[in-house]
Structures are given as C-alpha cells and as structure tokens.
Image 1: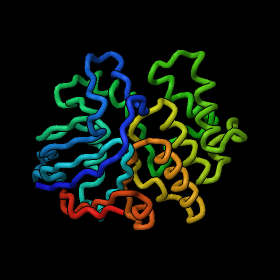
Image 2 (image 1 turned 90 degrees about the vertical axis):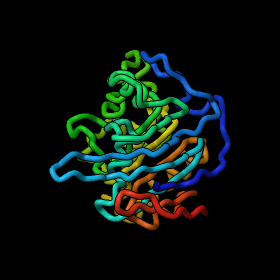
Image 3 (image 1 turned 45 degrees about the vertical axis):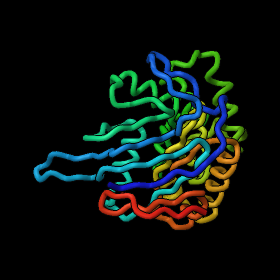
Length: 256
C-alpha cells in the first residue's frame, strides 16, 4: 500500500472552509485532517484495465503545504481529480475535513467541493471575453452567492492578489502572471480551506513563476492548506512537504 505520513500543523476553529456544507447534512470535527485517505485507489476498466492509482494512504493536516511530483503517467492527475471530488475512487475511503465523501450524493459532493476546495490550473481557464472581475464573480454566481455580495467579494480577492488596477482588463490583455493571479483570486473568492494546484507555474516564465510561488507562501502563512502537483523541483522546494509519485504509488516523503 502506498503511504505518506502527516506533519503537525496549527488548527483553527475559524479556518477557511470550516463551515458545514450547504444543502448537505454533513460536517466533520474541527481538529480533523483536511485530507485523510485510507486505501484510496482508482482503476479504469479498459480494455485493457488500468490501475491509475494504487491503494494509497495520505494525511494532510490544516495549514500543510504539500507538493506531489512525478513523471507523466505516474498518477498525479488521477489523485488530484479524486481529491478535488471531480472523480470517484474504485476503492478506499476519502475524508475531507473529517467528512466521509464516499456516501455523498452528486449534489452534496458538488456543494462540498464548492465550499471547501479551490482549484488553480496550468492553463488558467479564464473566459476570454469576460473581464478579470467578471471571471472572479462567476465563481460566486455558480455557488449561488447573493448578487449583492459578489462584486465586493470579487474586488477584495483581486486586491488581495495585487490586481485592483486590472479589474476591467480582459484576459487577452493580461500577462501570464496576471492571468494566473486572476485564477488564484477566483479560486479563493469562495473562501476554501484547501487549494489544489495542477502545474500552476507550467505556462509562466521564471519571474512570474516566482511571483506566484511568493503568493502561495503568503497564503500558506495566512493559514491556507495547499497541495501542488508539479514537475518542477523548484516549485516542490517551496513546499513544506514533498511526496513523489511513480506508477500510481506515493513514494518516500521529504520534509523540509
């Protein structure tokens, strides 16, 4: 069984994303790990059948900053999709903030994902004909935040990322670093407790990559839990914990 240990980290009753799931009668203990995997596995039936993730144990505590590295095809993306509740496992158990995600209905999984998880992707995934502000506001619209709250919350998220002067800009007029910061603002606007990042600096030059990693350091210092998938050892080196993946298995962990 593939296993990675846990690191101690401060907990907080008022940590981001600690609210109960809207529309779901589920909640977890406040001191529970953010992520707790027990024998989690993913097998695709084929033909031929493929085991993309071997049975895996993993604990990520509140305010951990974990990097997962590995070659293409190692299972990193499969694991990220499972952690983000974008896919369901073939076996094993996944507790998110102490909530057993296995028995949840699809609507309750979506509510839990929207409330507690933010996503940052390599390709930004911004709508090209919407302004930076509108792109961030859309995340609030999808999660049925009252209209009166959307603009001030989106403005605050952009200001937090140093983009108060670019709110009306279209993505096509933004630099790569600015587009990724808009994507981070969009991920944070729903106040998640966990940020999942898939190759977040993959399309950036070195200067913009450093700026994004500096933002991650600030977010981590403010209490956010981060899990970053990356091929880049420099990115992995910024995290407090680093686990490698190969052939669908988590391997040895290095704690900084």
